[in-house]
Image 1 (cartoon, rainbow, N blue to C red):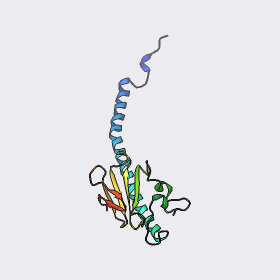
Image 2 (image 1 turned 180 degrees about the vertical axis):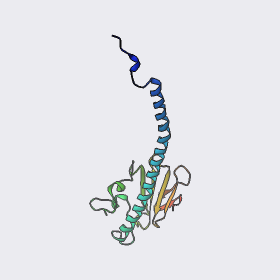
Image 3 (image 1 turned 45 degrees about the vertical axis):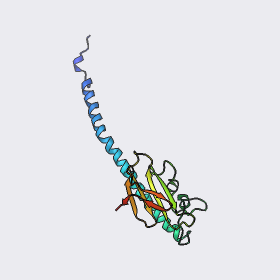
Image 4 (image 1 turned 90 degrees about the vertical axis):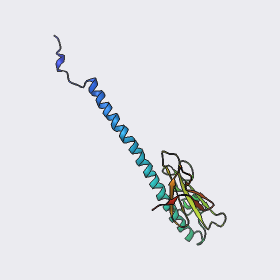
Length: 166
């Protein structure tokens, strides 16, 4: 007996190709938006981490710093024997690459007296963020585009570059 092939069900090759093309178009639209959202989240995390560092520095100054000195490193603010244990370990170790949320944090003071400080956050790469951030002893948060000449930087306890963030 012969089989009747007219009753077979399924998709043709052209129908499958149309579905694949539609999925590819949706992915081409969604992936850049996903990456932009991730960058924005990393930047928000960096700004929030700087606020945390400023609060920790104020606490350190009022307690271990004798009312005049700030912590000279992030490690001193973090957990561990002999440290203040004011911030979490991930933030305390964020001065090394890859940092926290794709940002590397640098903290500096004005030397042996440690009477002023600043902390800057720079993206590890252009995929983790496009802006730099900084905070100093006054607690004002600054930010700038990482690729321009006015990028936020920190040296000897003095924050340079950037514009005030609201």
